[in-house]
Every structure is written in C-alpha cells, then in structure tokens.
Image (cartoon, rainbow, N blue to C red; front, side):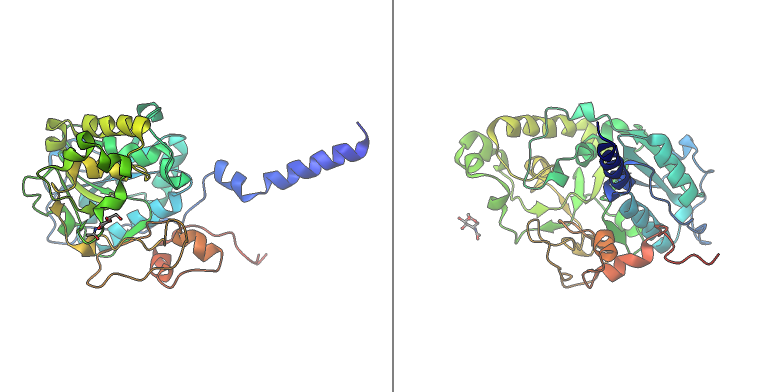
Length: 345
Ligand SMILES: *[C@@H]1O[C@H](CO)[C@@H](O)[C@H](O)[C@H]1NC(C)=O
C-alpha cells in the first residue's frame, strides 16, 4: 500500500476519534457536584442512606428513572430539580434502571450526588427482545424506553408505590404533593388529556377489528403521557399488569395496531381507568413536534413539572445555540461540566 494511503487511513481514524458520536460511546460526560440537600425541621425521621430497610418507612418517596449515556444530562438535571424543590430531600430514594456500564453510571451518580439515596438496577434488554416494533421515531424504540413496564418486577416487593419520571423533565414544585395523591383505587395516576382525539393513537386496523377495539368497552379512554406516572406497585403486581402490557406488544408485532412506541400498550391497559392528576404535573410537549421539532409554549395553568417530550431536547438545543424560549427554564438545572472555552494557564 503506498504511504499516502496510510496517511489517509490515519486521517480518517483521527477524525472519527474526535467525532461527537465517540464522545457519547466512550467515557460518560462529567458533571459538577450538587450541594448537599438537607431535610427541613418538619420532616419525618428516616433511617440512614442506602439502607434497604427504609423501603418500609412510609415517609420515604420512591422515584424511578432510567439512566443511559444519551439522556444522562437530562436525568441528572431531573434529579437535581427534584432535590432542589422538595422540603424533605433526604426522604427521597431514587431507583435507576440501566442497561449497560453500570459501574460508570454508578460512579457518575456518586460523584454528582454524594448524598443521594439510590439503587441501580440492571434492566435486561432480553426482556423486550422481539417485542418492540419500529415506531415513527427511532428514539422511541430503545429498549430502555420499555423499562417502565417492568418496575414491578425490578424493584423489591417492599416498594409498593413509585413515581416514574422520564429523563427529559424538571420538577419545580415539592414532589411530595405528587407522591401523596390519592389513587382512588386505581393502579396508575397521571394527568389525562380527554380533548386529544383518542382514535389517532391506533391504526384503522385496530378500530376495524371488533376483537381489539372491544378492549375499551366499558371505559371512557383518554390519552395520558407515560413520562410522569404514580403507580401502586402492589395493585400492579396483583393485576399482572406487566403481562397485560406484554400481550399487547406481541399483538402489535403481528398486526401493527399503533405507530408509537411504549405509550399505546399503556393506553390499552389503563386508559379510562386512570386517576387524573392535575395537569400542572406534566406540562409536556416542550421538545416540540415528533416530526417538525418546533418550539412549543406552555399549556395554560400552573406549572409543577416541565417535560421536553417530543423530538427536541433542551441540552441539545442550548449547545447548538438555537434554543427554544422555554429551554432557558431547564438550563439552571444543568450540571454538565462544559469544556472550558479559554485556558487561564
Ligand atoms: C377523531 O378522529 C377520527 C379519525 O380522524 C374522526 O373520524 C372523528 O370524528 C374524530 N373525533 C372527534 C371527536 O373529533
């Protein structure tokens, strides 16, 4: 091979090593250390950090989130926002679900939040292998998106209620208010959107099949977003909800009854049987449209949680210097350690 070929290969390798894609698949990004958040005087006492026995304590708030390299910056911001706005931060236990590189992720959480009570679980992607059918957006087809279906199996049976949060949101209110809602005998609580045309979430093939569409008989189904959910895990286990969701995923694989990812199975199992949570707890859609990526405004009414669901993510738009106006509300929670622009030395 002539020498200039070697030079060309070297050049290609050098360029690819410095591409942003490699920055993601290599080391995890680094984050600034969050301050220690301490309980206020009126908080109920809890046992020490990372103590498994504290699952039994009723004052403990359990929050589940996924962790992966792509959304890590969002997850860290979400955790930070929860801690900042709650009066009893030491009463919160995070349950993180991850597919790979758990030691890296554990180290990142430990160094960013040295005082956090958390557990890290391995989500085995084999659980959903062969059950995911491609949707309108590739990001929705990631196995980790389906981890929320398996909370009842992954978390210890002593955890009987869980809040599930997506990784592209921030909480700007005391999460205890969401935690304390009365589920009214329902398995699941979430803000409902009954004005959305429910027909659109399923294909004509679904509605034209009496067998499928009759699954909504006796229910008045409304759309809800699965990025913010309060779940009674005891009732979920009792009702074998994971199996029900998996059954619909298998049906989807065969008949293509919807176009979205992990949301429609939740609608099929729960819609119309959901405890409606105040809309302030999921101001969703701030990521913009699935297809267009446009900026969105807040829905009217008070705000306790901002959710960048949709294609655009605030950290990507801020980095590209083309943010949407509301992305500035996410920025104060960003602990990502940017590379210094100038070196003083
Ligand atoms: C919902 O959408 C379907 C299909 O586009 C349409 O036939 C139906 O009239 C719509 N319903 C409402 C209440 O707008």
